[in-house]
Length: 399
Ligand code: BEZ
Image (cartoon, rainbow, N blue to C red; front, side):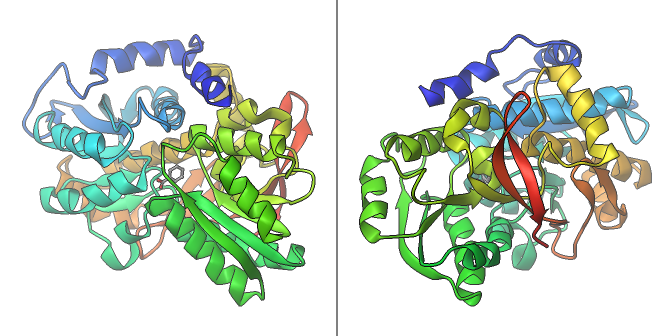
């Protein structure tokens, strides 16, 4: 079954840098424990950085990609950021805030890390915003797109190397309004990320003249059978469908969309998480023709990305994903900030985060905007058959 295929990927034997990485991460303690305990996250020259990613739950494969991306940057820089030796303390975000919030609190209060990077789930990020603001430790969000942790509710201590949910959905709205003649059905996981990715899409889609044929939110992390929803889509007479699903849910949804017979008759659109990385491998042919918006694809044809794809593939025996790039870039941000800051305390680091300048990323150059989000390009991607299986081919830039 699709969900299993995604999880099998997490159990593959590590190769190259990945093998070294696995050892280093095991030493740092996946439960958030650390070998050395010091007051300010800085023991001598060593700086402790917390990595908070899901190691369990529907988003566990995303967490694995983020660990790989962060570790690749470290390995390429001799284990140092800002010329200081780094000790990673890894903690399990789990399925959401119930596990993610206490894990982050332990990283800060017990392990005394200088900063935390990671966080996949929007609900976890929403639960952490005030804690990091009050603790005065930087949180570099390397995936979770919750609109409300940046922008209007931005904190001097919360910065995002990934995206805001509404922006990824909004990037796709005008393109779908342009391509589809008739109503579009909207569907997503029922939590902050799904609601915001639908709202962002709906706004720009309707502004561009698009019509909504129906809207449905499915219980997050619990829905395995999408047939009742697919029947509703067919009954609505929609001419296309737009969705947000990621991880194991994306595998189940896309496979069932094809099994139900909708794939050939009703074009499927979504935010890029729908067909990213191991998810696409598990979906196989069922994903062919799916069109998505995202700020990365391993297919980006630039020397910078090709070099990254080569290094990542050599280290981990698979193509990189957006999750790996966002975490790789979080390490790059910390590298610049630690080099620039007068010390390694959370307040000193937070002060320089707004002035580190552009990040030379595999996705293309980006910088933090005034809202503390990554200012970046979005691409329209289409799943096509490539040399080694399905790929997210770049169709064109969206912004
Ligand atoms: C989120 O919860 O923000 C999220 C999770 C997976 C992929 C993209 C966004």
